[in-house]
Image 1: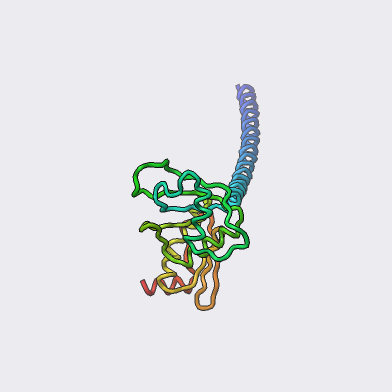
Image 2 (image 1 turned 90 degrees about the horizontal axis):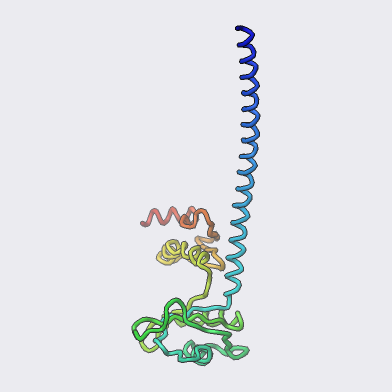
Length: 224
């Protein structure tokens, strides 16, 4: 009887050792998989950033034009914009004539509703011309054409748009308090407060948590 119990204990011990060995192997495999998943996630984030950067570089010469009366561009929006934009914006003399590679409507098809603004996306041949147009539009202030407001926006990826948009509240506070700020490409907000310059970068994990520098934050909390 005791001999049988010894044999059973020996067999049980062997089984337990086998289970422990398999458990150890499983833990090692899980650790390896977790490491691989973490590395893959990091790689995915890098690839997403690169893809977003490539997308934004591909449209760096693009501009959105919003508010043009329906059908104003006619059947040849490229020729229309090349002739209309310099006059409408009173552009300074350009080294070369304004050249647009292509232009087309965005999002919505053409309708007979004259109240709905027309949205055009066009690509300029030269990046310098895009900067000149945006600079002149900013200099002129609110734009109108045939009693309709006109807006010009740079083209960018959805991800970059959201990153830049996340600074809106801070920009509004700085503007209300007459604090100098500037939003640089791709998504860097520079604040100049009492001689101290701070630059805030948009991060994927806390895109909505931008705060002014500590002295600026203290002042905001005191004033509000």
